Structures are given as C-alpha cells and as structure tokens.
Image (cartoon, rainbow, N blue to C red; front, top):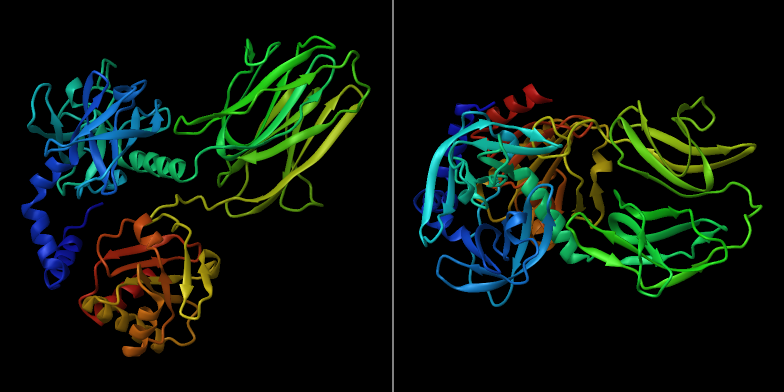
Length: 545
C-alpha cells in the first residue's frame, strides 16, 4: 500500500543532500534519453527484434522466441553501433532470453529493474519499443489491466501495447523502472499485452550470470549397476540440472533414451529396463540447466548379465530436494521394482509421519508434506518387494521460514555474510532469535554519519537491550570503516559488506537505509533514506520493535 507522506519525506531528505540533489535532478531531466539508450535492436539471423540493456556490463534481455535457434546475434545500440551477442540463457516457458554483448563496449545505459510485486492494477505505465522499419523509439502509454499468473509464472497485463510488435519492449512504471518485458503477444488469445514481471526477469538474469560464471559440467559418472535386463545409472553435475540417459548398440549411435527427468538436481539417477541378457550397450548421460545449457558425457559401455541376479533389494541415489517451509521431496532408485515409503520426524526415536506408494517401480519419488517451518526433520526411505525390504537414511533438513525471502516488509531478509572490524564473520545465524536494527551507511556520506550517531546514541542508552543493533558499510575498505568509526566515536557494532552483496540484492538505491527485523529475521520496517531527527527515529523504533 502506497503512503504519500512517506515518499514526500524521502524526497525532502534527498533534496537536502548536496551529493544526491544533482543525481535526482539529472534522473528527472534525462529519463527519456536514458530509456532510449537502453532499448536496443536485435538482429537474429534474418529476424529483427528488440531488447533491453539491464546491466552496464552488457546484459540484454529479450523474448526467447525471437532468438531461439539463431546462428548469429547482433545488437544495435541507439548510436547505430553494432556488437555481437552471445546467448547465455534461453527459457522457453517464460519466453525470455539473456544475451551478453561482446567486444570493446562503450559506456552503456541500463534500465533499473523495479519490483514488480509493488505493481497494482490501474497503475499508469508505458511501453518503449521500436516499430518495424523505424529507427525511432515509440512510447505507448496505458495502465495495468490485470496481474495474472500462469503455470506458476507472474505476468503483468497492460493496454499500453497489446500488439505483436511490442514483443521484447520495456514496460516501465512512472519512475522509469523496468517492471516487465513485453512477451506472449504472438497469437495466444487472452494474452494480449502480457509482460513477464520484472522479478521473474531478475531471477532469470541471476541464473544466466551463474551459468556464465560456473558453466554446467558433469563431475562424475558411476559405472552402471546391471542385471540381466536392467541398468541403474548415477552421475553428478556441478549445478542443478535435468537427467537423461541415451543408449544403443553402437558407439555414438543412441537409438534409445529415457524420459527426461525435469527435476533440477546435482545428483542424478536413471533406470533402463527391458534390456537383452548378455549384450554390450553403449551409453551416455546428459543434463541441462535452467538456462538451456546442456552437457553430455563421453561414450561408455556396460554389459548385461546372462542370468537374473540373486542379489538383495538395494536402495541407491537418495536425494532430498525442493525443500519448502511445509515439506520436501525425496527420490531414490532400487535395483528391483519395489514399493515406496518415506518417513519424517523431528526426533529420530519419535513416531514418524509416513507417506507411501504401493506401485512397484525402480525410480521412486514422494512428496513429504505437513512439516512445520523452521524445524529440523530426519528423513528416511524404505522399499519392499515380496519378502525383501531395503531402508536408507536420506538426510536431515531444516525447513525455511514460511516468509518469502526478499527485501520488503513481511519478507525474510536474504542471507548475508559481513565482516566485523576485528575481521570475524557475522551472518544470519548471529541474529537468529533476536530483534535487529540494521542501518546501511557510507563513510563518505554526511547524512550517513548523522544516522550512525542516531543509532549509536540509541545503542548507548540501551546497554542491556536484547535487540541487535548494527551499522553496515558497503563497498568500502575495512581500514576506512575503522577510521570512520573511531573518528565519530561509534561504539555500536560496525560491519563491512565488502562487495555490497546485500545492498545489491536488495537494490537499495538510497544510502542511508534502515531495516528493522523481528526475531525470525522477518523485515518489519524499511526506510529508504535517513530520519530527520533523533525523536523521529526513536518513534519509528518504538512502534516497530
């Protein structure tokens, strides 16, 4: 819910800052030019489309269907300069692609990615896009007509640009922030004017950056466990990905394959049955990450036995995944078709809750629901066939908070790892069970110094308080932080977020900023900017602690 006086006070704080005033004015007067520079033309083979620069280092987002299958990608900036583009991530389900500009790039203008969770129906928006054959950017204005969700994916629908030519264009809010990328406008009835919500876009960008920094690889492939008619395959990848096995009778010719297991896991397993006894087969395993990057193992062989084994029922490849605040999934493989039973309890010796499936299968998967948030559980599995039983402990898990992890009120604050001025680590675990005040500062900012002194006075006047109070400096040198704290007599704990990880995750555009967290690390209060006076700060703390 928007609070006009809150934003008014924030603007006053910004205007009183000699550092931030020029930035505020320039963002007001240069908004149109900056937007024009951030929307680019994309030449994918013979298809001309458009995209959006979302990072000054050269990340561009566009629609998946505009570039999928293309052999050559060229990006044309507003200046007319063209640069090659490398596709980092393709996500067909969300119709989004992430491309990285290549070469010696000029200074790029990127759009700020806004928070699509704050968008409301009837909000005024605009769409920035190119028309076919035109070199000029076109602005279409309208409103948000609905906020639909389809197959678990969040969208925004607008009447600003319902035509197909808007695909890949930027959906902006009144502040000029990117809140969506125009998509799904190509013939799906009822999807006219759909835009993929910016929080979905940001998630895909993060996945693309991870895939670029740590390319998907197969870490190891175990020798298959074989019988006269079946084989069990196991392998590991460095990142979560899908699972599939291809096999056949000749090297490099795989006429058979298992169904792709779409679960994104780092430990993989698959079973092939209906094989012929005493035959040598060639095989390879393959996995694909969320961005469509695929890896395959080298050709290898296995030979089935001539007779059925007398071996006992065995469980392998037990994996727990998709852990939520209320449950988790568990999967495993047996060397014979067998039933599936999963157990979970908060005490190894206590009575467990049970989930079972009596179908006889090699590959087992159960969803264990009914767990409590922020609770440790012991998980084990069992399979039965005829007079045989096999059991295995899966793992011990701790369910997360049922609050969403984000940087807004009512969300659980993302994980952080700060350094104290003594060089020790300070993480989420250190505030567990404690109400916490976090004030983000910069040592070069005069308003930050004022806010630091406000918090420091509160800290000194409440020496026996159970409330954690901390100042966090970002993107600074530790020596500068120590000198700053000494200069102004700061005795409250001061920490360093050396690379600005939490500030970047939370997209804090104004420093100073304040967070107040409850004992479960849930954000109860957030203030962008500083308090105008110490009584104003104390009043905010009084009503939120």
